[in-house]
Length: 399
Ligand SMILES: *Cc1c(COP(=O)(O)O)cnc(C)c1O
Image 1 (cartoon, rainbow, N blue to C red):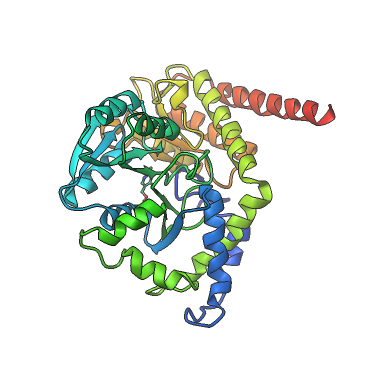
Image 2: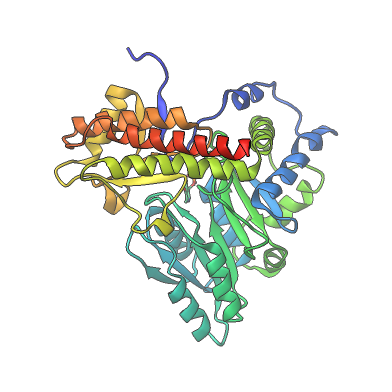
């Protein structure tokens, strides 16, 4: 029999804080009641703050991030539209796959897994497209399969330099609410997210922000859509209602989780993710024969580390030992990374000591799987970083 709790170090679903779980334990309620908007309208406002937008429309669909991808595409594009995409991990791959299956004409740039968005190639293609055939540019902000964060502002700059009118679509499912995201400043047109990652909620909501330009495009977009139709949603959302039954429990949870994010302060949440992620990275650097999948510090993700294991080790064994012996869930290596990589998710409701526990568990699982790492080496490196950082903060506070 297992005792204690299972430790969740997958990059979603993430830990749901006790406060949020308790807040969801409420009776079912009338979703047509006159005061239903009191619950929902502040959530739209709160999500706007997390997206850092004043001008966008925010949508919450029963579903998951993948549903929000589909909503973004089917509302704003037309069959046969040319779109510029790139593939450097399983999630960017799946978005390309969806775009092709929905009938878009996809120009996909394949990039070595471990790197991020190929900004220079995007810039060249946008400059060369003097007829404006490219209708949309897609970027996966935080590629969860490889632990790579891409520079969205640089893609916006490439669009501006080419004086190109294409809309900018960003998947920030595993970035929003944990790494810096700036919808308005970066001129994003559609930003896709979900409830079960940085927002510390159960799965169940696909969350989407759409610029006014995207809303305009949706009025003439001719792709088939029904459940995801922007117009139906917006008509009802204006007063806090939905065109079909919304998951009210999740809304109660979100009220609490957004409250927690704003109590901590969004900037502090982002700084905490850097601090926690850097501790994990230092642990990885201390493990003989292990290295990050992300090939350059500029790509390092503060929400997930994908870790290449030594050649003699099967990463699947690390994950299975972690789960069965140490009650710890690590993320697996997806697709071409299967067996080569395991992932430590470090986003959402997490602190230093939880990370130390995850690192310690990973060390045991790695050693069990045959890695010749020194037990405690990663823990020590992370402890030094977490303490050093704290001492630095105390020094600043004292000055
Ligand atoms: C989790 C994730 C998705 C898929 O979201 P679901 O909620 O599982 O549909 C898409 N993109 C990225 C980058 C993700 O991390």
